[in-house]
Length: 161
Image (cartoon, rainbow, N blue to C red; front, side, top):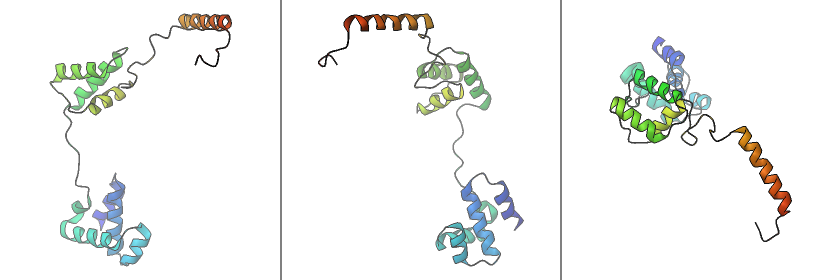
């Protein structure tokens, strides 16, 4: 029973906790119907996880999928993120080229590059921390120019939109 309590207290995924609670309640004498009502699960769920626990122990209640190993080691990923942070602006292609040149890694999906950009404080939609074209003097001058043109031409007629 202690191994079930460990899963309940240490699990990072709610599915593992639900499985362990189901088994613990079953061992403590709760009926399958009561367990179903409390956990909002089916009768098959309760019998499935109780049977798996009896056959395989606490490991049977854990999630099987753990994901794949990263192509970049942790220190390589941190170095890449630091490189991205040091850039004023950077494109997905530049990150791809950097990672390939430095570590010989080419991802199949752009999602991995997007995640690196996000970790570096950039976005693949807008790969700059600030708009380099946003010069306040130029913005104010352009606004004044627009105001002058607006006053000169007047309101647009209904056919000019």
